[in-house]
Image (cartoon, rainbow, N blue to C red):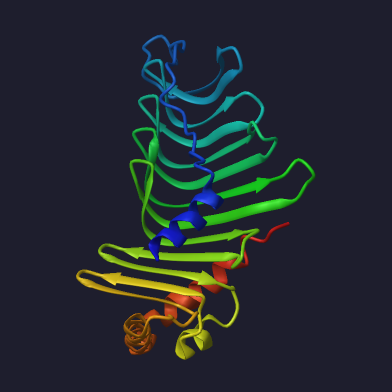
Length: 249
């Protein structure tokens, strides 16, 4: 059954990377004669790359903005030449198939990577203006990767939504609509549900199994999941709330 989930995810994600670049080498003038006092400076680092903000000891330090061409930028805090602290990263580019990707991360950084709490969104648009994919991840990140929190994906697919909640060893995954999640959960009628916590693993699809043993297992999973309705209710509500932030338009 997981293969179906993996195929759906692969079709949506198209193996798109965040494309946050590695640390750029900065060659900046001294802030002052001593090279220690923060100052705002406008500098052309190289062709297409510019920085404006505070510098100290020849490095971005404090608040500033760096542009990589016209469609990629970071505005926020730096420490010793690297993105560290609060900041917003925007990257908009067109892939080989003519799709426009817009990636935005707003949150905490450390050592030039997403580290700490933040929100990451991605939107993909066809050349004709049709939005085919829109997602949001909000929670905590570590070394550029999503760790805990909520991940909502909306795509031109059937079903059109995928929801994920992660917290340590607990994972909840749902495929379906973005409406009536709680009533459908109570009825055991969601398109696909996977719940895992430690050694506990429960999964069901809305379609009855032809094999009698598998159908008993499916019904047992539904019964177990119905028994933890109160526990998952806040997550279902948050899924619906976040889904409104990722329209296909």
